[in-house]
Image (cartoon, rainbow, N blue to C red):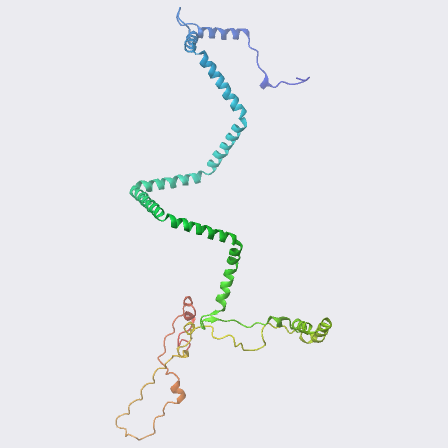
Length: 336
């Protein structure tokens, strides 16, 4: 303790007086002395009992002390493992405490499964019995077809090895096959039952390069100079003439792309198989009028005979876009 140090009250103790010490010794003597003259005190009885129990047990006590010291030494040697174990247990307890909801749900699910098994014990027994029957059948099948299964396993092993050796090709196939199949669907036309396409001349995308490259390839001498002259003379004319398809308004390679049953007509009379309704019958002559007198009634003109007879005006029907193109079309007579 240095000079000028201050002792706080928490570290200050009052010295015990001799009178207090003597009183405590008297109380201890009264407690330990016999209650009756000539009898053994409580402390003496404890000492006698301990002596009787320990008498003749020296070797066992020695072995116990030695083993206890060995156990304490082992614990001391593995103190790091013990601390790690306690730390891991602490982490486990903390995780379980934080996952109380999950544990509660797990207990509820286990209770539900237990209740289900308790309510339907016969079903579990039947399932186990059926599984046992299946295992017996499989065992008999394997015993009867041991050689065939061995041969099949060998062939399967060779196939697996071949697939493993061609894993790169398999990956490439899986990468290319979807695109190829989609391209096949795009070029297949069910109306003709064949593959169709369109002629695309990619060389005309850069006509200057195409023509001058051909001139350079055909020239025997001075090919480089010929190509330069070609570019010099043709560049002002066709430098902006870049096309991907022929400049024609007709493509003879593309035909019908829809089958007759895939076409929807807005009006029934547009169908090729449409049959117009029959015109009404002529009215009968009135009685009393002489036959053959008067001008003949005008007959229908050829163009009127070809046109369909007007029928009764139908009420406009509502459209339903959910039915597709047919549901979105106005029914016949709906626009009148």
